Length: 327
Image (cartoon, rainbow, N blue to C red):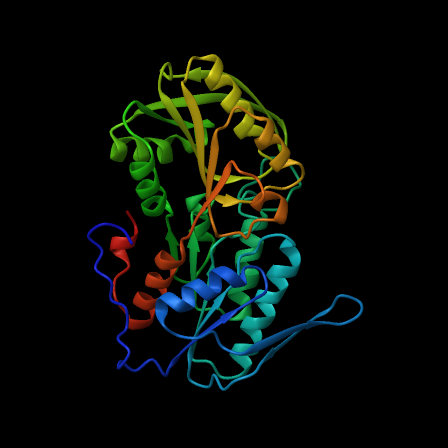
């Protein structure tokens, strides 16, 4: 929990009878941790597939007049997890749920938030329209790739930040002589906010991207010499940007290079790149479950955002402010 944020965890004797929490198949471990924090068991549901891959959803308990929360990261396989989420929302709506909140720790398609070329879709907006059209009433998510995606929805959106969890880890793990590094110009605001809270220096990687998922780090703006550098980003996908940046930082004299990212997409041969890179550690959160290969990588460490999301659900349910979670 963020410092100064007093938990409003519902007491055992409080009436929680009108709350129901459900989970899709994308991240059941995280959903279980969130349910444990709230002290409310996950609702019974069944997700099956026909032989052709078609998804079938069944809610196996009464949700009439219930306020329902559906926990589902739209991670790999992205299209399947999105479809699961949509079908669960539709099933709850048709079962007379009074209010439905989609809890999406990782919001897929968020990188496609604008037109970068002629004749391309704005996929993040399309997914937002589909979710809203399905009947969801509110969205809770973590570290959207671009903050303006909140404006793609005509419903309330709580875009929480993993910053409190990551900051606590950095403060308890690293000592002085820190420099926070943004891997590109787009992440400077995030890196600056972390540097301010850590009383650390700030550096920026000058990056050129030749194609999607392909990047070439060119230079470092800022002083990293004889410092412990922490690269900060919202996600790590193919790890090309991350490992390239780590190599450049080392050549500029940093005594160690670490990385902290919220969403561990880790597609393709990302784990191999990390293992062979100059990175000493990569710290991620559990918004996306790690593959077996990633779990076996000694450089990758996982922090849980379950308590943060659980607190947001509780406050949303009770009508309390979530302001103190946005730190």
